[in-house]
Image (cartoon, rainbow, N blue to C red; front, side, top):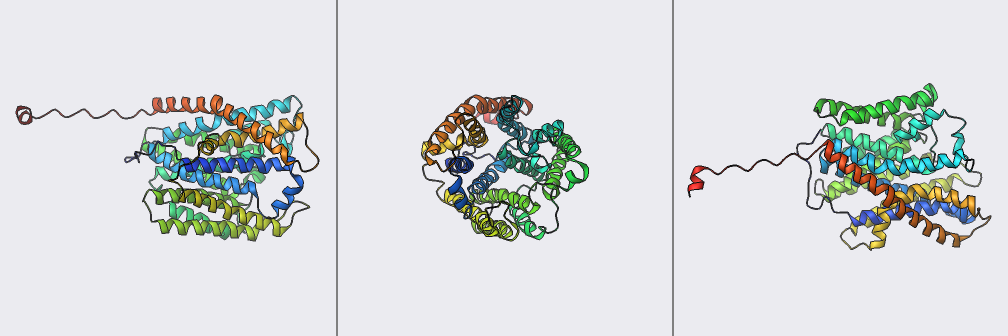
Length: 427
């Protein structure tokens, strides 16, 4: 299915350096946050009383995804090309990372987290991870950071559903509705309701089949079939976020609101909505996410406090919006090449840093106290591994995706030039 009027601008294919810079900062922040468990355990406890760097980093990622992903779909004007591009951009490295963890587990070097190998059926684990929505299916992630990909996939499904019915420009209404729904439904919506009622295996199987069918149908050439598939995928995503997430449903709604806020900013930048409208939406979503967190978040460790958790969440939300706003304000400035490059390899850095920490624990062990100098070799190794995986896993997958996208959905042939009339030929 193609949009009749795809957006194609002269700068559409130009990489936006400020967004790469934000992604690089987000990935490194999350990596250092998780490394602090290993190399700064004492200082980490003090820091987490004030701000959660992990939440800050992933919220920046969500804002950037919201800015980029719908624009990518609208620029192509084709759901077939969109899904082909997304799947080949994400899955090669994802499957490689999961395979690495499975090999470590099978060889006895690593125990899968949260009882994944013992408390859940292996087929359910595999199917849930293939959907990328395991965090919305009641199954722990094989790698801790994979939970964010569940909301990325839910966002893709919702964006495609809105595009299929021509509602993709209603970003202001979408973000605002989600922002209002988060606190309004906080006391009503249950967590993991479907998985608790029917079992993780059945729900994972149903979600896998529905998601595969929805994407396949959305790529159909008949408009009605494509629309039906896209809407089915959107309904699946919304249902899982509302009643089956691992986290409280208000948090899932807040995450989606943050992502659609990125879309609102993109529309303001393109002149499709007024800047003051976009600013109002940003403030609404930020206040809703931070405020609902202050109301609902509770401590979950023996050394933490409710006040610390609430403050850390709220400051992470405010900090993410502030950084995104600064990046947007400086978007026309030159971005240092090294900073832009960190964004290019940010997906690799995000997925691989947990694996690197596993390997370092196995080889050199984990220090008993704060050892901040260990951050230096950790970061150097992470950037080297990210460069390698981007070059040899990500880029080949992306190239293959582009080839298949052109094959599945070739550009329409240019219209033949009109023959000159006899009068004009004779003149």
